[in-house]
Image (cartoon, helix red, strand yellow):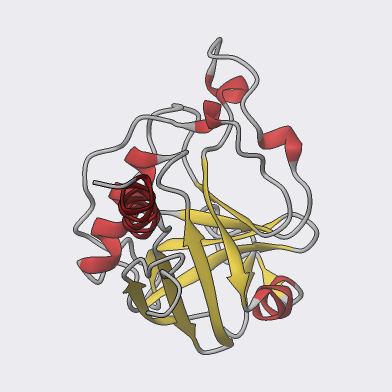
Length: 201
């Protein structure tokens, strides 16, 4: 086999590997507009796998963004329009906040309790640079940080629209509940598309 042929095969393998590692995306259709997040499976494999399973199961369909704080974040994924927890939760996952990804504007991270390894389905979109939420150490729940696993790649204007909606304190659980409700009508997984194609194909 000639060096040229070997080079062509190597290029083809590189393209194939690139296709396999392209990041999947999830489109959220809401009553305030649509936004798309790109998942970072390389940096947050356990978190992304968990999130994808929830999307495939329809966990986010019919849920609301129940916590909206301008200049901080918008949070959803856990409650229905009746303000009841949506069932079907998987086991909590290992916190991957030490993956090097930061809670900057547009990033998407997992919500949790003070237990660092308590995240299930709820997530939030940072609407400001919130590096105070980043991993510092494994000393306690606060310094563990909040695991970023993706970013908004389309529709950040929708997130910005949501963040300024008027909110009210409905109960101890819902201190920043937006009105009107921000409802996720459908969350759809877009399978990872090839990142590049060989010339002429």
